[in-house]
Amino acid sequence: TKFDERDCPKWPQAQADYYRQAGYWQGITFGEMLKNQARQLPHHEALVAGKERWTYQLFDQKVDQLVRGFHQLGIQDRDVVVVQLPNINEFFAVCFALFRLGAIPVMALPAHRRIEIRYFCQFTQAKAYIIADKYFGFDYCQLAREIKAEVSSLKQVIVVGEPQEFTALSDLYLEAEANDILATLTNPNASHTALLQVSGGTTGLPKLIPRTHDDYLYSVKVSAEICGVNSHSIYLCSLPVAHNFPLSSPGTLGVFYAGGKVVLMQDTTPEAAFSLIEQEQITIAALVPPTTLLWLEAAKKTTYDLSSLQILQVGGAKFSAEAAKQVKPVLGCQLQQVFGMAEGLVNYTRLTDNEEICNHTQGKPMSPADEIRVVDEEGNPVLPGEVGQLQTRGPYTICGYYKAPQHNTKAFTTDGFYCTGDEVKLTESGYLMVVGRIKDQINRGGEKIAAEEVENQLLAHPAVHDVALVAMPDDILGEASCAFVICHADQPTKVMVLKRFLRERGLASYKIPDRIEFVDSFPKTAVGKVNKKALRCLTNTIKNI
Ligand code: J2J
Image (cartoon, rainbow, N blue to C red; front, side, top):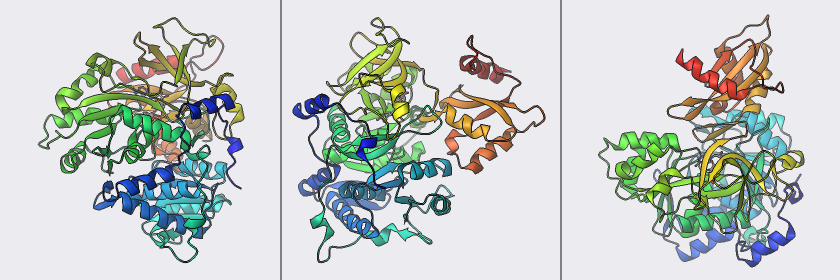
């Protein structure tokens, strides 16, 4: 079964026409974008990871070679491929080869496990799954074996490193022969889905986000402009590459678009980052708030020279104004706050903004075509400056999740605005301040956890009668997760037992509750629902006892 664009709600015709006429959507694909760079900057370095250094020319050649190898394996236009790779150059060779073939990568994270990967493969009827053999001690070949046994659509497992019974990626870099397939490939349609991003989610199952070449490339281009990224920029990528922030805001793709250099790192300690900053003369880096706090601490006593660093982007979760104020004095670079979402809308503080704005707001929409409104519970606009839910639509915000018509009626308004679930305040100058959230999600230092998903997994344990997952304050992460569990009266169980249960079922480790509290009942709201607000308060009291 092939990927069907009809499973991805699209912009109404008039809106799409406008985005094209206004020049937002340029009909260019990611494959072409890289080809252009390889022509213009062949000897310029594009990608660095450890000892690997790829120029744009080499990068482009590797992509073409992989196109041949993938094609030979039977990967074609409109096939879905789940890509789960760490921060290595191959991630990009793989993704761009898939882009050129018209195949669609699912941007899985290295932290995902059996539950998530099986779901992605099954739900998309993926034809291939691409992994690294091992990463942080985890054996992905074993995971692939389990998935392959369960998902019949999955024909190929491709491995970076030791392939065991599967196919080695290194065997798929093929040189041109007679009747080169590259000559016969047609360029994918730029208005079609280029990739599937993974949503933070609010429901039992993660949602997939279809991003087209047109809309994603537009967001990448504007992001690069706003962040002043150009061919001299050197971008440090320490967040997991597949995540929307380091991929597109402006991220690695924005750097390629601008002809700059991406430096990938896997070791996320501040010292390793500082050493790379000095060595590679990094000019821009992107972090989530918890890592920024670690950098701020470590920078006070480091001997590394960080003076090349001009911009530090911080996003993914709320960054406190107190920490924000320290960035310039301690790290010697400018702070840029980034408030984005894989569904689309990204807000940036601008490089020309004053410190008040940079430290206290989460920026403003990147595009003049972004439409935003702040609404109350009934969906009516709140008074200026009041708190409400943020809704948005625009040239790079999706109109619906992949294959999720029912959920889409809830997550999108009838006039096509995405309901972000974020509670914000709009300042007089048009900047957004994130003040909270109405979606049932935990933002664990930038990693999103859908409460319902974890609750469902815990409910599968025979001893568990009911469960409610809520956020609890954490000094470093901002939020950690706490599960309140009611056991069946005759079946008491233990914290360790439940945690092990979740791990063995194959839930990504960041979703495993940081804390589990056994209770006899839940506080209820007036209408009889579990009162999560009260439970969140309870995490404080428990902590203080
Ligand atoms: C508060 N909450 C924030 C911020 C995201 C760039 C940057 C981040 C993401 C991302 C992204 C926040 N302050 N600065 O995709 O391109 C919370 C909001 C939002 C949700 C989206 C990008 N920045 N958030 O984090 O899809 O709740 O994208 O709705 O992972 O993260 O999460 P995600």
